Image (cartoon, rainbow, N blue to C red; front, side):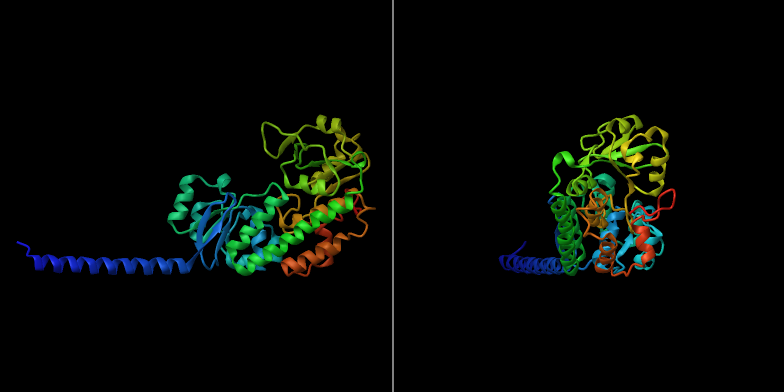
Length: 365
């Protein structure tokens, strides 16, 4: 039989035990809070990440580029889409060879886990299933959706989110870069503003080889760069089978649209376009106004940090008189030094700007 005195002793013991457990839990939560912080993803969702982020995995090559830029080659990327990282990328940022010596590919869940990444970021809705996301989270990998890539505003926000993930210093660098990025877009728009609508050049983006060309519509980032530079995107309202960013386009449509300028993805498809007999009477082809988009450590025409230079480059190609004070070699040289901490040699400038890519070997500028 439990006496009143015994009951009081037991009650007192339980109360003390409760206090001890409560304090222990509070201390654990306090320690956890001290070691973590919160970031907000592209969908406005809060995600808990480590206070100090030293190892990251990026789901798309462009965000590996942004990470390297913001950390100034700080050796934090331990997994990335290996197929999208060129040798030139690694030359400019040799830290990748040390931070990811085994070439862990972020497209593989097993390799992300093996890399020791603390945070994985990119357009997770497009690349990760719910079970994969849950498995990563259970393994202690914070998954942050960074998916804004369709407009200057969206891409700017993605740069800022990545900066927040990486830390305070990187966040400040991201803000600095966004000012530069948006400033270039605004400058291109200012320089092209004097051109009336009826005088603006009709432009078509054509990517791909073997005659299977793709174009882009108004939902692709390069559409916004072209608009800022004063061009009209002939494919602005084009969509094939519901593809969000455009799609494959047949040669007959290209002939019918008759673009005055064509922007290709590189020198190979430029050469094919110029040599294609079906396109021979297209105004851009007849006038040799087919220009390959520049490419540094990543292509400029996609969701690239180097896309910050694309509106100015487009302006120099479309309206050289209006953009006569914009010298792209200087723009690229300053960009590589200020954002990559890399002094780019003159011969590499020529390669980045595709200055020697015509079939006849002539300078395209």
